[in-house]
Amino acid sequence: MCTGRVDLAHILRAFSNGMDGVFIAGCRLNECNYITQGNFQALNLVLLFKKILQHLGLNRERLRLEFVSSGEGILFAEKVDDFVRQIKELGPLGHGEGIDENILQLKFQAVTKLIPYLRLVESERLRVHFNTLEQYLEFYDSEEFGELFNELIADKLALSQITLLLRESPLSPGEIAQSLDFSPSEISRHLHGSVEKGLIRYEARDKRFALYY
Image (tube, rainbow, N blue to C red; front, side, top):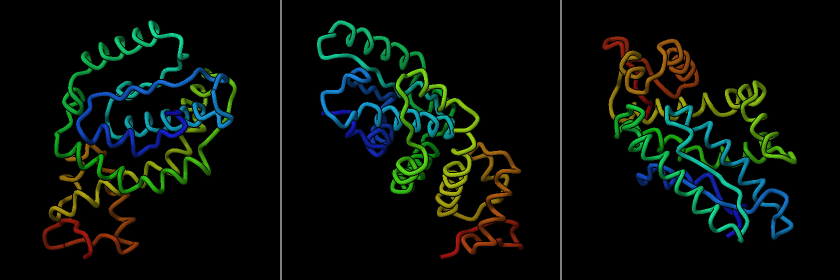
């Protein structure tokens, strides 16, 4: 299967089902067997998802994309062995990062809710094309991409996590911040913005926030 068919939902499903790491292998860049050059598209998706993992508090090295040709079986095996070693060093997903299992699943649910939006944003605003892997890595580590990620994705991911958490019960800002490992100022900003939009209500008596139903 061409790596051009890899979707954000495929990667997310693997992690949601408890995989400690995800390894994707594709043809070498500029050596695609198809005119679609799907491996460039896969590279965009993987680098974006690495940023999402980092935003969720997970180690971005749990996801890896390698480019090898069909005749490089030994090299492929070496790459897989190295990835397995690295994942063993990182430990079980979430546990290695100190994230509670229930909160981890909530974080993945929050991303799942945004998959249609993330596909659109990746295609319309974030997809780039360079000639080398180094150029891709430089862009996705750049301040420009960081600003785009914060503008288009970070706030929506945070709000998605908050609303899922509030489905269980009303919570104070401190309780939300502690559960999601957000800063109090970040939680306050999202909560007050959501109250203004009518998504969340403030229960003054208990000093807690709850969802509107």
